[in-house]
Image 1: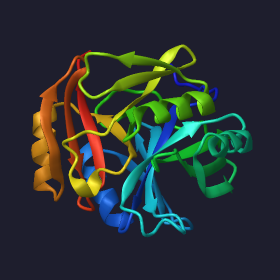
Image 2 (image 1 turned 90 degrees about the horizontal axis):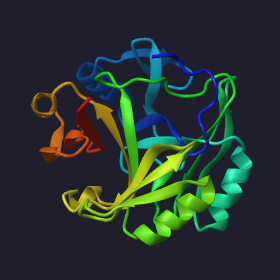
Image 3 (image 1 turned 180 degrees about the horizontal axis):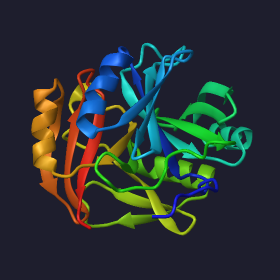
Image 4 (image 1 turned 90 degrees about the vertical axis):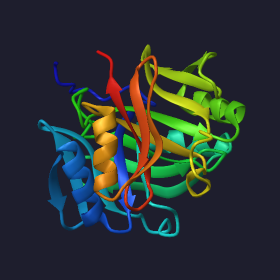
Length: 257
C-alpha cells in the first residue's frame, strides 16, 4: 500500500488521542493489546503510537480545562484552515474547548464540541499529516460521532466540514456515512442504547482493526478492561464495543476483506 504524503481531505479522521488520568498505564494497556510501538515525548508526557512504522495516534494526559471530563479517545479531523473551521463550529452551534496551538513543526491543533457536546479535535497539518494508511490489526479504521440529536448533528457536521451524508436505512438506530473527497471517511449515528449511563454522553467513538474479535474481547477482560457490547456480526465485519481500565469506550472490528 503506497504511503500517503499529501494532507487528507478536510473532515477526514486523521488522528486519535487518548486523554487519560494515568497515561502510562493507559499506554501499557493499549500497547499490549494492539501491538503498538510507542515513542515517548517527555516534554508533553505523551506517547506517539505507531504500527509497522506508521503513526496512528497518541496517549497522554487530559488538556488543561478538561481534567473534569471522563477519560476518552478524541478523534481529530483534518482541516486546511483551522481558524476558519473554528468560526464555522461556533456559527453552527458548537464551542471551542482548546484554542489553536502549534505542536512543534508538526501542525496546529484545537479541540471543539458539536452542539450536543461531543468533543472532537481539529488538525491543520504542516510536517505531519496524521495517521498512515493501514487495515492491519491495531490500525485505526473508522470513527463515528454518536449523538442524542441526529438531525442537528448531521446539519452541523455537513455545514462545518462540507461532508456529503448518506443515511443508512436498515441499520437500526439512525446512521449516516460521511463522505469527504468522494470516500466514506466517518459516520454519525444515534447514541447506542447498549452504552452504560456513565458512558452515554454524545461522543466520537474510534474503531481499531482486530484479527479476531472474540479473542480480543477476552484479552480486554483479562487486562482490566470491560465489555459494553460483546462481539456481533455486521455487514462490515465482527464488531465489539469495549472500555479500558479508566472506562474510556472504543470499538474493534474484525474486517471482512
